[in-house]
Length: 315
Image (cartoon, rainbow, N blue to C red; front, side, top):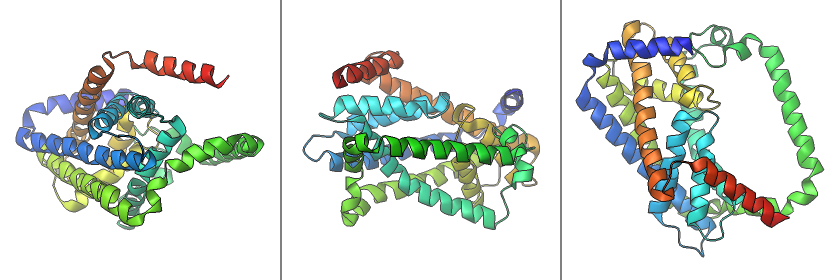
């Protein structure tokens, strides 16, 4: 974390050199991107709850809240907030179904992100496991430094989860029915392509455009190849974010991938500046949405109260 704080100071030292017009265009693309993704999620939800009215503005607010909390809370804490708000806006909604719709939403992202990662690997732009163990500010350097023990631990955890699923299989029939409802959108491939995939294509296009203008704003060579590399580092950083928004992992991978393309101080300014800007921007949008929709910023109390109510009802 001290390394990240040092890099943030480097960013503020270069603040006067930022191209504000390009930065403004990047943030406009970011906002439009969030609109597109929330629209895709709304259409998935509308398919799962075909008999209910699912308003886009409500889901847009829930999605902004999810993104805003995830910007500052590690381990995907914002997902619980987004699901909670969506549940309050859809009559008869259940958490298993809502959670499944988020998985359905991320399937397209996972496929496209994997394609970009394979492109970066084929280009030789990503570090190997031996390099990852020593990367500056990398969140997972300890795990890669002890790779054998990490793989054994992951295997044991997966085995334990499998045994638990088999143990409770008979009690999960109703649960899996709710989960399968969240994937209803895939039943009609044409409907999925026209009402979900098209919005996600727009989302990914805007991601690359936003990154392009972030590169320009911080005076790093702005090309499609470089924009894809930045997107790859972002995708890898959010898999298991330990630092807020995975800023440590993203910054470390960016410095490695862009070595020699610009001065180190410029790369530090870009890698930290882009992430800090997005954290602030997403957090402002997210907590503004929480304040408007829940009339308070103490969202944890509402989530815990709803959880207690569900537990009481199931007794």
